[in-house]
Amino acid sequence: MPALNLEQIKEIIPHRDPFLLIDEITELEPGVRAVGKKYLRPEEDWFRGHFPGQPVQPGVLTIEMLAQTGAVCALCLPENKGKLALFAGIDKARFRGQVKPGDTLVLEVEIIKNRGSIGVGKATATVEGKKVVTAELTFAIFAREE
Image 1 (spheres, rainbow, N blue to C red):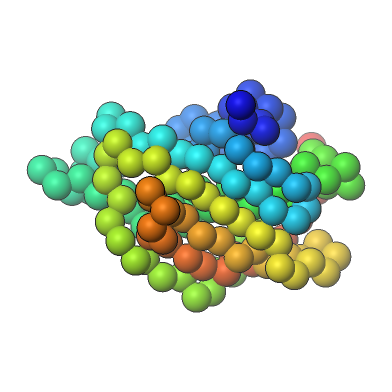
Image 2: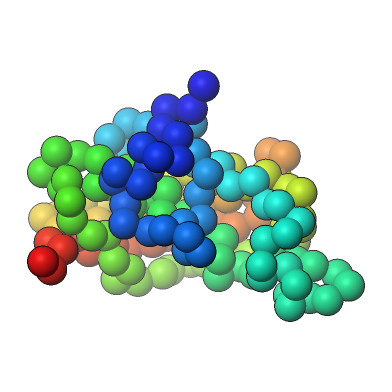
């Protein structure tokens, strides 16, 4: 049973199709750590062009999936309800393996620094226990414009 299903995720982050890129949150410690999953369906639109005949998940989309997982972690705190988490930096990104249609990405983000509206998450994506992407993601929390 997921900690948060897709509808509950939508209550926390503003992303919607076609850019809501996580399917569920399986573990959640608000403001501290979150683990999400993305089930990579063969019909995902990006696989058609990246690359025809040999589809591979674009690494930048895996980074975005990690960022959305981290955003759920940060924005589920009561003081951040209704706000946005935006990228402020990506450091130490490493792409360690190919991710293909049919894979399940496990997306883990641990908040390692948090000062006011700026934070840093240590992010790791795995497939079947093997690290495929690691990075440090810096984010800024902003009020949404009405």
